Image 1 (tube, rainbow, N blue to C red):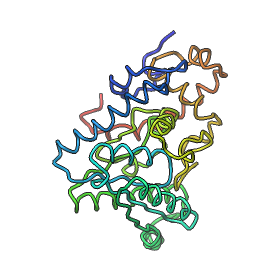
Image 2: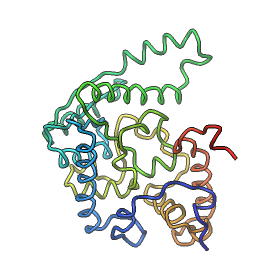
Image 3: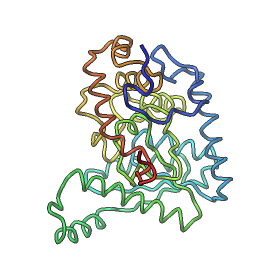
Image 4: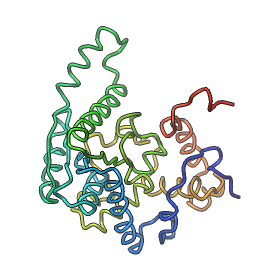
Length: 291
């Protein structure tokens, strides 16, 4: 009952060392042994990357959410807190609480926190677009633009201080396409790219992060809830179980539904979403790739 690539949804498989991690009954790497192994693998990965590039710093965008907190913690373990910069980039007034939480977390971690307010950039951008775009107030387009501005700022800092930008997109968001092309999806590495949301939250518990980062009710962050597949109406753990069984392990949608204990229509809905966002996960096509 297996169908390679989850019935037409193909994607790069996680690193073999991640696939070999001890797993719970749902197939997810949330066991204490898995957490301990990840604490060895991920900082070592960052350390090797930094050394190979001859970089002096690691830059992590902090938004008060669990993914960025985990990435910053692992970066500090990899190269030392004095070589990590946490870049806090709020846009709206509603981001202020999360921005302060991010700065407080950076202070507790011992890394350098720097704030860059994106609002003036976005305002100027919208003003210019008013003369050329049909709808310069498009909510989805503006949210994607915000992420690209943030990544541009992270790379400017990285370029001026001989650093590397550490991406914080997890595997769930990558498969769902809950990223902005050339925004949060573009970085020098995606440290959490092999881990599902549930696994990142489990790792946060293993890192002894504050309860706000490990609470199963949400992940926090500036744009929490935007573009995360909320319309799927599936809780995070069930979603991760479906993705793990169907895409990583290659079970058919029917077998996946049976193993996870959900309606087959839920699995089909998730797979359709993944297929519709495939373009976000792959190199832009060129003529030589066709045929």
